[in-house]
Image (cartoon, rainbow, N blue to C red):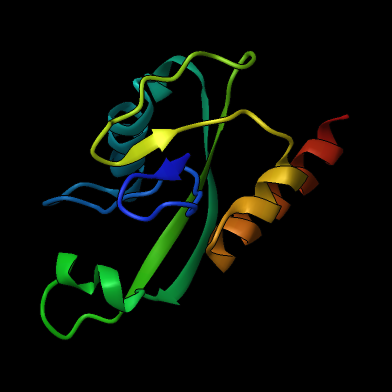
Length: 127
């Protein structure tokens, strides 16, 4: 999905934990908010992987003062095919279904590249 606030910046579903949500609950909510899909209707998998990364300076205003790093938890959502997506217009302007290799070329963050490579490895194991 291409970000609405940064043209040319592509990413997968991302978001932050709100209140006392667990990372899994946040993932379910973010999938719904950003795509209109109900993650509970499909095979949602907690990959038991997390990455710590530096928050880009232009997005630090979204966090408490002094917060410069974030921990990202990886989840996978297996869909039956290329489903229609209803984007949140304040977050994303367009989406495309592409192979994980193509997606890895487009995304801007190293953590998204890492997640996509892990997706490719998981896919190879299921073939």
